[in-house]
Length: 119
Length: 114
Image (cartoon, rainbow over all chains, first blue to last red; front, side, top):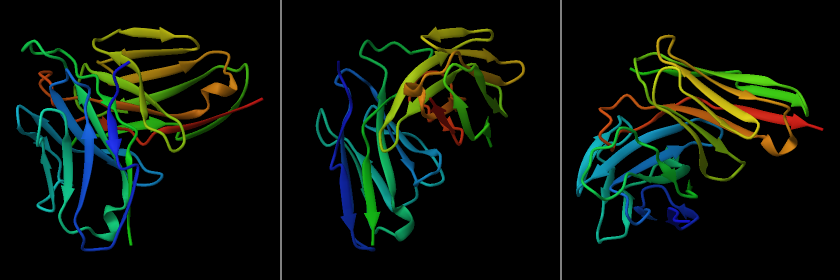
């Protein structure tokens, strides 16, 4: 069964460093997302991406964050200068399928997550 | 701003009992999702509810949606230990064309004891 994969599973970094989190969405999906979950808290939407551009972003997704689809399979989240409060689990998700048809719903499939620890 | 509230946030119950988790949301939507999360793991899609009155069942779990009341329920029948997990509801208030971010509730941490 197709699944979303993410690397690395755990990333430890020093405050102020740049990190790149990587995701491989399900291959025929069109829409890609990043969410984060601070330990013990709810899942929060960061950004969605479609047709090589950001579709929607939350207030959390400020200038320190960027997303990119550098090739046909990877989807990345970059945090330019990490802060302590960026420590969280980051989930990638994907939805939709090829066909060019608008879908009436948006079931998103989540990857296993990358645990980011900022020291 | 869309608010999604779940209750209870913590629930400890015995095997064999029935219980219901509630999910209220503040803005009109007819697309609601339930996810399960095991400790340290990702989110697993359980149910997609797309219209008023929608009811879906899978095993001992049944989810329903009342869009007029802005309420969804997740009912557990004859609970078993394997259902212990955190359950999240999530609401989509986008246009429905895809790429809409979901707004999650805080989750219900469910412990089922033998």
